Length: 108
Image (tube, rainbow, N blue to C red; front, side, top):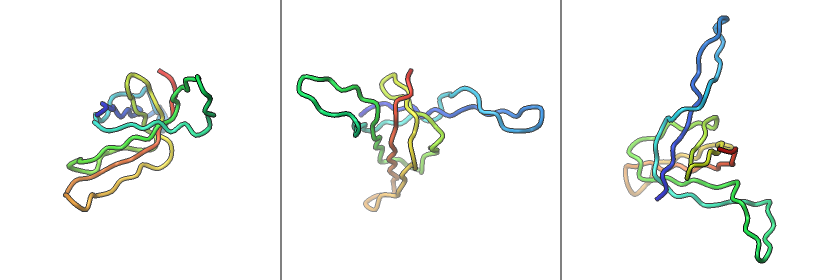
């Protein structure tokens, strides 16, 4: 299993009362599986591709996790943005939850 930290932007209000997003901070630790999903890089013999996209799979959660498409994920020391919709479902064989989401490397 891979340790995954969901990061969320701290938000404050400016003088006009409008929301302003700040730095990303640790929000939710998870343990799951990560599969590379670079679709646009061609495969060449003897070439090592750089993993810039992946899909994260987490299951057996006791409650639905608070993960938004605006969050980021830190995986193996690298920071990724969450891309698209976060898939969430209750597992039929138990009273646990599973989540799946795509990530794209943003650096860090």
